[in-house]
Each structure stands twice: as C-alpha cells, then as structure tokens.
Length: 369
Image (cartoon, rainbow, N blue to C red; front, side, top):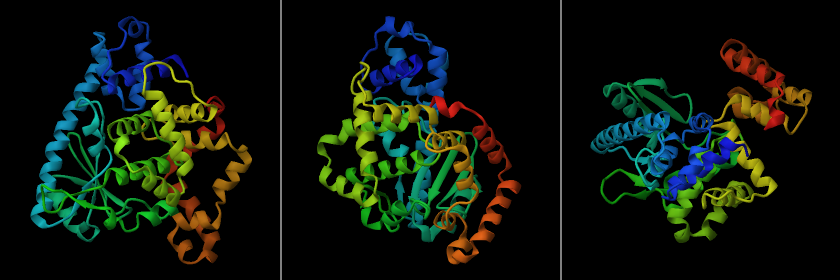
C-alpha cells in the first residue's frame, strides 16, 4: 500500500470504530494525497470525522462532510415524500443499498451517497414516472434497463428499479428474477418492505461482485461490509448465507472480501494481508467508488495479452453477445450481424468510451495495479 492508502485506512478505521486518531500521526500525513484518494472513493465524510476527532484542521474534508450531511438530509426528506405518495397510490417499495447502510454509521454524513436506489412494483412503472415528473424530476433514463433514473436540482438523483439484476449477470439475474419471496413487510406502513439482515447482506455482496467484475468498485464498499458485520455479524444465520452464496456462485469472492474487510478495518494498526487479499485491496483503491472503463481494461490486461484481449473484445462469444444484443439472443445465427451492430453503436453512440478504451489499451498503467 502507498502512504496515502495506509493513511486513509487508518482514518476510516478510527472513524467507523469511534476511536480518536493519534494527532501526531495525522499531522505527518500528506493530507492532499489522502484527500484525492478519499474523494475518488467517496469517503471524505468519514475521514473528516477522524480528522475532527484528532483536532486537525482540514478544510477540504470539512466541506465534503458538510455537503454529505446536507445531501443526506435532503434525500431523507424527499424520499419520505415520494414514499408517502407511493402509500397513497398503493405502490409497494423497497429501499436499497446506501439508504439502509448509512443508518449504521456512527454519524450522519459519514456514508456519502450520490443517488437513492429503490425497488418498486414493476407493474406500476408508468405511475411512478408520472409521480416523479409531477415532483419536478427529469427522466434521464426510462424503460431502457432494469432501472429508471430521475434527476432534480440541486442534488436529487433517484434510481427506481423494476428489477435487481440484468440478464447479462446470469446467476444473479436468475436468483433475483422474482424477489417477492425475499420481501418482508414494514411494521409502520402499508406498502413498504425491507429484507432480512441475511438477505440484505447477500444482496450487498451480489451487487458488489457484479461491479467488481465489471468496471470495479471502491473502498467504500469494503467499509460498508465491515460496518455491517460489526453491527449484525453475530446475529446473522451464516449457514443460510453460505447456501445463498453457493447458489449465486460467488462463495469464494464473499469469503475473501469478508475476511479482508475485517482485517483492514477492525483496528487502526496496519493489517497483515495474504497476497490474494493485498491484490483485492489494491483493486478497490484503483477502481474508485463507481469504477471506470480504464480500470476494467487494465484489470483484464493483467490476465491476458493485448492482442488476445482486443480479439475477445471485438469478437465476443455467442453467449456473451446474446446478453447484450436482443436479436442475437432470439436467434444466435445472427451473430455476424450482432457484431457489426455492436461496432456501429460504439462508433456512432459511444465514441467517448471508445477513446477511453484506446487510451487504456495504449497505456502501461495496468502494470502498476
């Protein structure tokens, strides 16, 4: 780990365990480098709590923390108003991910959020569209994937999910194709639902596995894992969880990730990591909160040659193309047309991604990851 990475882990560990950092140790840190890394991973708010406890002035961190607190309050109020409308119109709903996780952090603003994710009754998609537009939202995406995206100034960004996973992640899509049996009714409303602690953990892990094997995922997710285990681990039914991980085909990932989270954040002292754990931790730091195309390319290039990677990218297998091109999924014999269609979309619609892809291929940064 770099000094900035170790410093950030130290601050985060102190913050989520409500420990006071050693002020002298904090004063020796390169806080500019730590801030850049924290911003990349959306953990400035948590880092600020540790810096504040050490009585160290850090204006950039403080500003980020105040913004996180403001955003959290605004989202809470707006989400409550939307859910009240759902209640009035009989639309069932399930808050997801950060909306639930942020309540486990010691202080408001420590768990930063860029959006709010909600699973709702897919049969009421058009009704939700009308509700959001009446509330002043613009539909950035509607009816094109498993979730619709709504935005309203100054900060509101809601992802309204009609499904939890898409077909291209086969084992996850199959497991969550009908999530109704996982839903548990809230006690204080008519149409709100939640997941059991075990099923929330399973979903959290499945969601992270998807991102990790896509464009990557940042250190915040690892911190979420540790805090969830710290809060609920002793009460979880691990036999049930292990069975679900097997069904999802992500058992190995879950075990390494859980062990890593506990080692890294259980104590401010530097953890002794196995080689596999160290590599996974570097992947988290390299990807950042939401990952990137560049990171995905670099990660692939560590495992194969550039010619082999380019060939696989330009000519994916029939099974892979079926996940992304609907007419190939209906008729695999149309594979050649599907390849041409896919190239055309990249050239005409996703040229910025193509440029990033070429730059990533041409760079040697992946050798450092």
